[in-house]
Length: 459
Image (cartoon, rainbow, N blue to C red; front, side, top):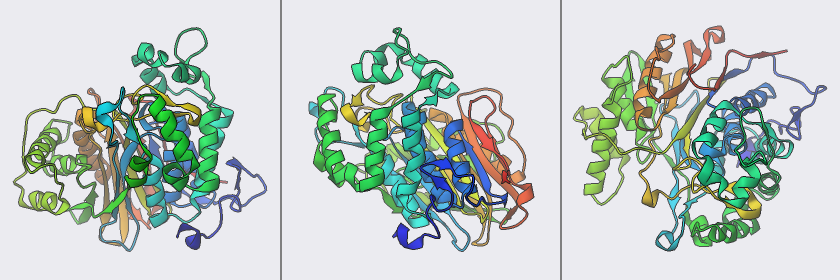
């Protein structure tokens, strides 16, 4: 259990109630790297690292914070996938918690996805974290209670769906400025109901959302909002731990997200292709893979994907239909423990409705929408040193964008970005970790509004 692996709670390490305690000890020197699409969530991860948490603790806190700061792409109603690695491991591990359809989709007005974010982050942090999960929920709860300024990315998402989003009364309460328009950059967004749900998760545990009183409240609210979810949907939808896809190149081993998070396969294919600019190689491979799996009844085999990758005879298809938006982030700590994640609501703001008193924006069911393209990769020298990690968003071009970013990260440089919707995040440590941390740096696409906190040293 995570609690048995604790070296200290975050409150004991100085993050009392999610706020810094100036009298508490602070980690000095190199604490790690964080790169994410949303700055306030990235700062949460940085603070966790500075207070002694490891990369898995910081990544889980970042993901939970995104449920507050970027609910358009990563509310508690979202799903996703994470890749984790630590020194001593040959491959690391993938954690898959994609958005899942409910049993009553056909009867629903606006079918919602089963909320998988908390369950997936919990499993990842349980396996790789160093503190109790309740501690990493606290910063998100405080952000929801105190309010957060709307970021550039969230403001852009709000503007894109203003009319349909504000048609829902509960969504209007959260996202309207009170004058009939959505919030804009730097407007304060306060979410007391979501804060209550997060506090319940902190006190009663993640399981309360899937089999406890919070889950019952959520199901009733989701049904009232036309989502069609049931208590059985929540109980039976589990995050899974999978072996990653693997490649070896130039003396390093690279772990990629495996299917059904098939963006990892696309990124591996694009990386092998040696492209220096984003193309459609990754998208074509994912398209071919999805067509192949549909012909086999939808069954997913990681071993099959690895065999195809090894053979070099990768399936290729035509362009995919427009895919749902996503968000991504990477966290690395001073020891080289690394987590790379991609998350999605299956549609901007999911169904566009909020699950009643829980304040949770409902993700959209994948039953009526194409599966998002989620990707992440971590490069390491065998089981000894971390070298680089990359992930990306950008709908159809996410896999190709991540491949370009990974190549740049391994070379210790910055990719050339000029056009297209892809937005990458990466961490590069050319001298390795453990090793010369002074050469490590984080990078986020300058065309976005994200934040890379590079080689941060807390005094």
